[in-house]
Image (tube, rainbow, N blue to C red):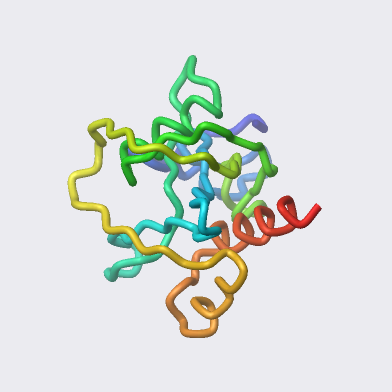
Amino acid sequence: MIPSTILHQSRWFAIRTDAAGEEFLASTGDEVLVVPLTAADKVILTVEPSTAFGEPTLILPGGEVKPGVSHAEQANQELQEEIGYRAGRLDFLGELRPWSKYLAVRSFVYLGRELSESWLPGDEGYEIGVEHAPLASFETLIAAGRLTDARVIAALYLARHFLAR
């Protein structure tokens, strides 16, 4: 990360300035994002509240990478906490930078397959819903205005491309 000065810091983000005084946001940590794919080629999306927009949003399981935990380990932990499954197979799909000009955070994207039931207690203070959608036609959710998170959309395209190879 570039040298910077913290103007304000909260649990999730900090407002910083670079050497020229330009402001940007920095996450308190990088994250993993997982595309959990069932044997029937359906993605398990989560339905969670959006603090930013005040409405439920469709996203993928994921969370902040904890110090000393590998990205793959964190991915499987998030799956178990958020949807009650563990992936027998995790494939790294790539790194996303959601708003690279003004937000310093990296999303490490994985495809989770060979899912088996396994629950771990989560750290969210709310109930997480789930929704299954075919990977082959997830664009119908975008067209309907239900899937709007750019990271999730990019991750689904990465997963579909990976599986087509």
